[in-house]
Length: 182
Image 1: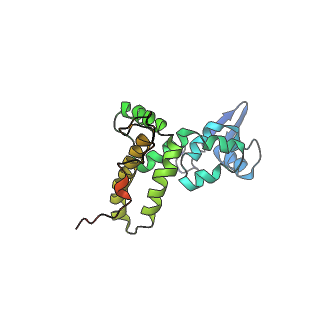
Image 2: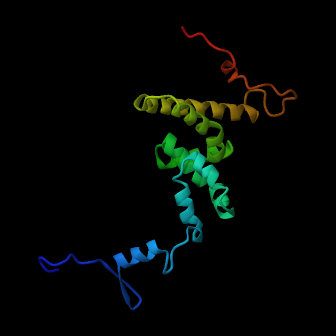
Image 3: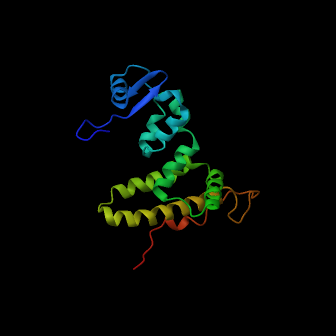
């Protein structure tokens, strides 16, 4: 590199042809010369879809069959849920969390029934700093109530799965009546 001369352009050797980074960018922007199609690799598409918000991910399923299949992957919805709730602490906790969520119906169901509605309510709330603090608490409470409801519906709520008469979940009945806390 000479002093006072133009800066060196990074070069890539492709076969016997030397191509500059600028030439590659021009080719990609012009759409010519082997442009990459996003549908060529489902794993890359999965990584991209995992970074969408819930509504966009749900609507991405209507683009084509490949996008529908990728957007149904539990790993994509897991990334979305963990972005809002936060990852579990420790490497073993991630596997245990996955097993519990899978038993409850998967991350897509968790988002659709629990996290999505809670995030919608929090989005309308108002002040950002206060809403972020409440968001953690609200999502944790919503997840806990969702888990209790699923557990009781599966028959683990005391009466057992072989009970002849199906009783409504008892732990969540307090939500039906207003409570005076003053």
